[in-house]
Structure formats: C-alpha cells, structure tokens
Image (tube, rainbow, N blue to C red; front, side, top):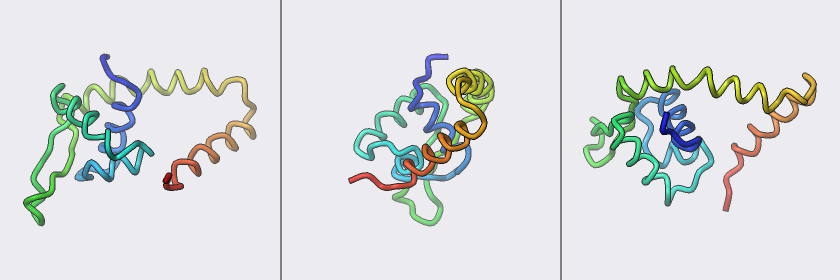
Length: 112
C-alpha cells in the first residue's frame, strides 16, 4: 500500500474530521506539529489528500481525502483491524478495554 502508520493515522483523522487543518491533524494523532507538514505533503503528492482554501479565511487550508485517498483508506482499514486484533489477542476483554482506554487517555493529554 506504500503507506506508513503515521500517514494512515493522518488519513483517519482527516476522514473523521473533514476540513481539519494540519495543526488539528497533529493534535488528533498526537504527532509533532513541526513534522506533520511533511506527512501531509507526502499524502498530497500521492494524491490521497487535498488542501482546500477555507472559505471563511482564505489564508487557511483545510484538508480532505481525495476519492483515491478514501478508496485506499477503505481498502487498508480491514488489514489494520486484523493487525490490531492480532496484537491485542493475548489480552482478555477486561485487559483490552483497559489498554484501549489508557491509549485514548494518553492521546488526549497535550505533550510539552
């Protein structure tokens, strides 16, 4: 698929929040704001994401998946779900729920 885990996470954030900007993507996936630009640029170059001028602020750029990006994401998602299931397989239901809860919590805390 020629897609890194960070690129997939960025595409997922854009898919769930169409019109988000680069800083928003960085916050959503807990990634460094200084380097998210390169991730987004690679996705744009691959034709998977497009930058659209924000109609309320012509200086701002919103991000959206292209049709090709949405198709690739949809094709990739089952593979990611299978891998996640394999990774979490050793955990029982309670441990899995705790792990996922802690992972979500760690993403919601801003890093310094």
